[in-house]
Length: 180
Image (tube, rainbow, N blue to C red):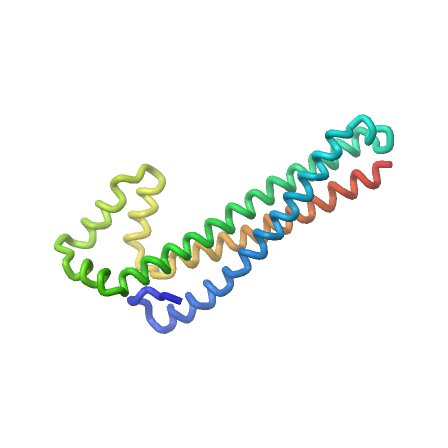
């Protein structure tokens, strides 16, 4: 694991624990994909055969079940987006830390001639709102684990959306099955 060099021993330990916890994003994303695929297949099958299914299942149960399955699919998309976001944010910090620890990175940093505040403003300048404000706010923040803490919050949301996806898929199926 490539830690930024300016972290204290405590911060390195906390970062290691947090980044290790983020490893669950991969299986969570895979689970979301399976639920998405299954829900989409069921929705497609039910919609394609709506005439036949409506003879067995009430229209209300069919509509309610389909609505739950579609909402479940939307939750799955959010889970996938959060998993990708967490993975790439941590990867960016790792890659940047590795680069800055290399000889080339050290040489570039030693040759900097402008103040750090001015460099921050130049880095944020090409980006539009809200990215430029977030970059400037983050640059002025002395919390060196800011990215990891943001990813931890995203992971909490990922778990909530994942649970919602699974519960809604189950409810949708139950509504359809009990709508006989």
